[in-house]
Length: 224
Image (spheres, rainbow, N blue to C red):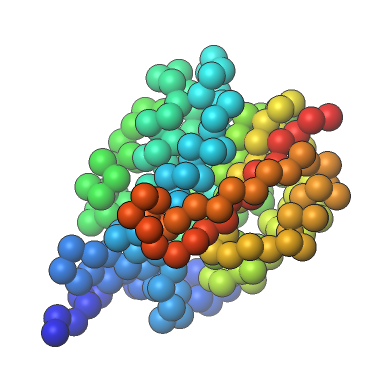
């Protein structure tokens, strides 16, 4: 039995230990020893981009915010969906995650950080949301395991009434907020509606047609 090789380790601002490991052909990012994401299962991240950008891809010069770089699969899919004049802002809190994507993780998603349409905002996605009123046609959030924060307690702000209000304010009319989650969350769904979004929920497989666990994509459209 082969052991995982440790490729990198870092701390999030709240002290969570993130590790990048590799075994055979699979890369895994661990948060305090628990699997946060794997290169062997990224279909639902692609679905997040497809569903969240379904309207943005029809626009001229669309602007999309991605909260959380991860292994780059959501960014890769977003780039593939959007036109050549798009701008994609990626808000990433942990500098080492960006470096991992420029290094060993880069080939997995075809080096999306090299695309001229991409801009990296180092810092909390909450700061980007608060400072960008009416800027985005879509906001894609995959900063944790969903509304129940796993890696950083600060992420919980994104999913409460204040975070929902900030996302609504950062969107242009008919813009879409799309949130990846490892599980259903009826309270969050109701919170989105209460916050002024027209809500639709999609349940997808972690490996899409190849199966895997069920994940949830919450989508809220700004209608007023």
